[in-house]
Image 1 (cartoon, rainbow over the protein chains, first blue to last red):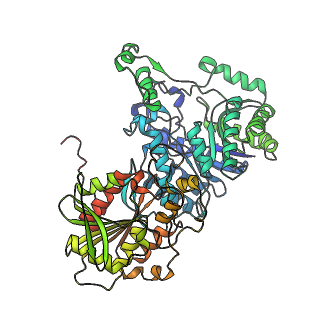
Image 2: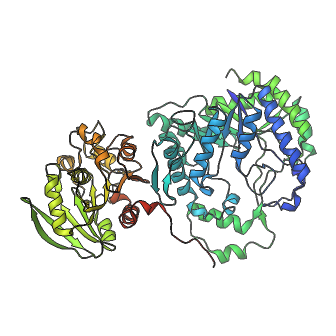
Image 3: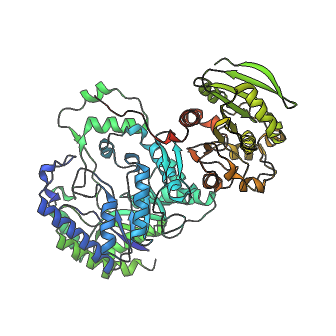
Length: 367
Length: 247
């Protein structure tokens, strides 16, 4: 089993952010931001030194909690710092982006890193739908078309034009081609059956984030069954779980830290206006909705957002056991870990990485 | 659109011709017309469209006869479009001895199977044919009237691969668009790029989420790119749509 470090590049004072999204740019202090990126890249280097085999990057917008609006930029910087780890783009929010541009970024990253790229695609959280003005009801279809286009763009030998439902490009001729032929490993980050099936039918891995093991188990089972139906067996790197982690010297230390947090939980919530959340959700699911009723039921300042919670909390043995459970019950071969919990300093994250590398990783590596 | 029908004869070949629209003449070689009416309607809205019904005879039709028929209905200058075996015939037609000026302004090959046909097309049952020809062949609705079994195989199966044809692709001098469904499985994966690499002025268009029967599955998309190409030829790559939101 492999460990992956989520290169979130969180802004040092993210724990002081307001709870609602988007975070105002006024919260940004340039020198602190510069240092935060340096700290984040140092964490990636140290993770590699401690035995992590992947570093992952994720696209999130308008907030410094995960400060990688363009994950390709971040991956390119880390590729120069880390010379062994896989660079896992988990990943671009495909419905929001120009797929040809994503294909070009993927091609460049695989060349810059000499074939260490793992490609991942996902739709994104509801708040992200607001970023580039994409209609939430079209996100799913844009995701499917974008993936097909990217795979064609990275494998076709000659220029072509693309007549899609959402994308039309009359000249596509992506350069450079990936080093890994015909394609770098691809992972679909999803929990939806239609996208899981797409992943299975197209030889792609599965990425699942932040849910308890008992919720992930049936998802992984369906994925494996559909892979088998499609005539292939997923390998150890094909099922990835991303989770929040806090590892301390002992279980008690971990609990003590938790109790120092406001509300006894790290604040991961991305809170947005209740009415906006309801409209996005309805649009995503294709449901009819009564806008007047939604607006009437959402007084000014009413916000919603779910707390993601910690998937792995405790001393090294407890954390290792919990990770083992994802492996044994769900077939997870790569655990992608979000260490930068709100309120933790760079120094504390480095201490955690060392502890994880010395006491947890040896326990899960042989799985 | 209303189409008028009449027989046309040239070089001993008589075909049924359906005509509609006005503007630049476009000759469509139809070997298999299932699901094509929306495409024809769209093309007839922009061009003077002549659909020459070849049916299963497309395989044996002589290119010279097609050229004479096309010129007899469309005149000295026209766009030539073909689908599947009709596209193969269109390709062989423009490979005839060059003329100056070339009467074919623009050549459009939709799902041609002339080169690199798929190797595993024998003994397919109806379900397998549906899955092979349509990106969503598992959806039973919308397949009414699709020929079955041997009829389908006769109309759609590529003929024995003509190895010499691929070598002669550089002879095609007219601007050429080759359109394939992004999920076409009637030809080998490298077929589109083979056309693009060997025909001097060739563009390949991939029609997303369609298989071989691309015009039946995505008629607007096919009509859009075919019309743009016939109208603008190689400059169809230039987007001239305005994107101003609030001037």
